[in-house]
Image (cartoon, rainbow, N blue to C red; front, side, top):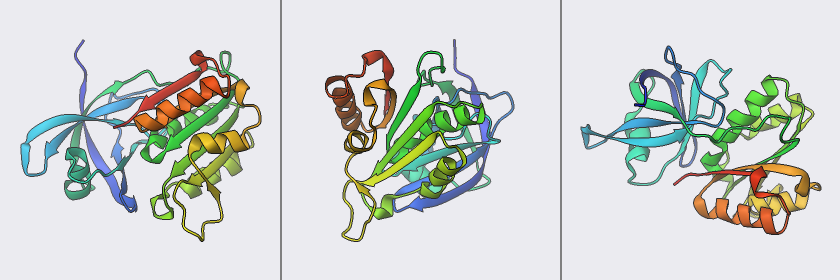
Length: 239
């Protein structure tokens, strides 16, 4: 079955960290998705806009939010990165296909205590999953460990703190893997932070999104050290 193609107006576009952008799209008529899914943007080449290729981006907004939110870590010279940093602006119409993917949250009847692990833009589908569950009245214990390299890589920390303050079943743990000497918060990779701050790891179901090496490291640690069954470890890589 062919994918549906949608056209959407970019309503906002801004840089939120030294190499991270966020942008929002007006939700096109007829488009719906499940929290954790992604779309395939039809991305033009900056030097030749007629040359278009697909690039996958997870939806960071919850389905109940009025617009579609995306976050992107820019890779120097990359097609999608150049398009977002050099071409895309509020008011532009963009095309995408989808929704795609099965990285969705299991219902409360199957999984009782949740742990979200994210690095940089890997937080996108996890934000969608967590926020939608909370808005639907989900009372399960939820911990989010979010790691970036340095202070200048941080984003969305105020929003995450506000979510944790609003919902007593949510706890957020932000860490840096390469902090400056002035950093007063947590340090280390997400799997290290989880080992330090989560006391009931064997009871958790894990949702992890980040680079392939990070995801692999988490899966190994979860199975071998935390003794979490494979069926309760859910992951999505980004490249």
